[in-house]
Length: 396
Ligand SMILES: [Zn+2]
Ligand SMILES: [Zn+2]
Image (cartoon, rainbow, N blue to C red; front, side, top):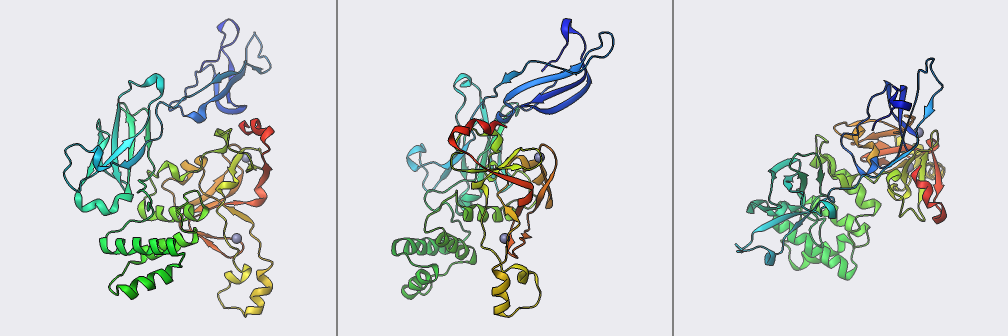
């Protein structure tokens, strides 16, 4: 963007604004460049500054210019190709395909693809959108994700982790353990049994049926979700976040799907949702669907090292109050969170202190440990119920 005065005169004390927020300051006329434009850079841009005619004028504002950034291609999705789709089928081959769709006006743009297992590249950027998994690794499919990019890498996007059809949640290093887990899950769902009961029934018939702790944990989660794998549920999001520190110990290259969409970039789908804004500057921070609810702990008792008597626990437990919201990470936190174990969460607009995060967990005021924790103090944000007619207000 370029900002000049009348007759192309130099502008001093130059500010550029994006949706009424100052984004850049220059001493005198300098162009403002958004190097890696994203959809969130869309909006109304404006500049202000003074002119020397010959004495310095009061600050003057330009007209607003609307800029729309369109996505060159959609976020890719990694999926397992069916045997029918693979030509010249060698048996038991697993082929992954990294799929995306180019913008209709840019259909001829060549794209390259890279494939990753955990944070390690198993195939570097190349033209083919397919990758054959070496046979011994097939059991760990869920650890894969892919990246699509232009040849110059000016635009690159990561896929979510691979979701296996149906039982996307379940993966294993040992095939037997996996089969036992799948059969147990099946019994749980069809007969509405608890995990313990289903596992017990299976072991009555087949005493050698054993599964590892990882599966036990996942099946208890499955039970808690009501025998459905609901990826939008708080309990699933919490589980996925816990896995992050295992899969990405260096906390780099985290999949995009881990971050909730910044509420300032969405204008639809906010109906019936509560929006939380910075109390100081009113910037939208997160939506109610991002809150990961927890059962209240037993108040101050949970902090004590000694065990209290049950009657005392009851008395204080009733007064337990959570003074923070624990939420899933939102896009505006990304630069703060990457590669960092813990720290403060500041408002992306006014830098007011909102709360803190810790990938290894923090304790809520009610006593409950939340791992990992992204906590926002309730007294730093305001709740705003979005009425359908006010939908357009979300731009702010
Ligand atoms: Zn709490
Ligand atoms: Zn703020």
